[in-house]
Length: 345
Ligand SMILES: [Fe+2]
Ligand SMILES: [Fe+2]
Image (cartoon, rainbow, N blue to C red; front, top):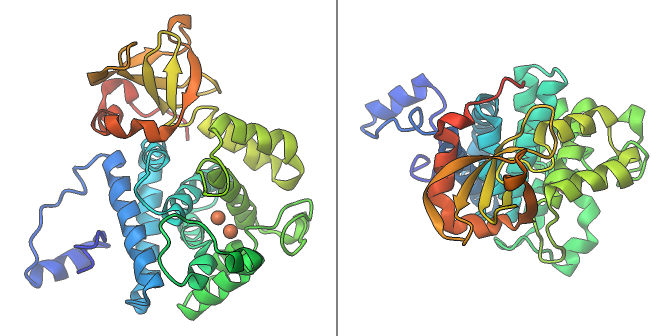
């Protein structure tokens, strides 16, 4: 049943047990691209979220989150650009699934750069995947729009403490996980929910706070518009610098750039392109693949454009939701030769 709901097999032992029980299925996960793999993983998180909201299979929820977090760290290390692009272009799943997943990917990258070991990163990613579980606990029905009722808005500051309580009730006792969830709305200048300051906040909490803010800005809500990545970074750096760990903000800016993977862009020659990879050391000229000709007609296959060439310079950022009709071509972009992973770590 879990496999049919999109769960992934956690280990060789588990695969053997499933085979012995008579289940037969092609092993496609190793063959699938990272881009496709992320779709399976976000489906797993959606299934976990649904089971939590509907009070099903409670004993399995945390083990499933841990398996998902481990797989997500592996995938994000293998091809972080493909992973981020997939979730940047995801418009089917609920806000909490997309937001939590994006926060988890960003947290994993920041934690890698700050030297957290693999086990710590898996725990931090588990925290990111569940950081707003306090909202879900108070939600009476499954609200795909992600909007909040008046009562939920009034109780918004309770969701961090509620989240910790829910996680403890589900069996989580890891301090890194619980502290990060409790403090993900605390900021270095003391402007957070509980007014904690720099010396009181763990590195994991500081990473999750930044990843949460950045991820929230990139996704529209019923009560506010989406902002493009460049504006989000400028807001964080210019207006909110005192709130965040400056070294983490630097990593975020240089790792994802002004046009992170999955950004939909208009080029100077009128073609529509998708950002594939950040160019190391350059914030505003990612490697891109054109999806349409200058008249907006979809291309059979995407092809590379060098945005440092003025003829193909980026002139506008478009709503990623416009990419839905080019979904097939976009999926191919991360398996083309010119998208070979860069050497950046
Ligand atoms: Fe939150
Ligand atoms: Fe959040």
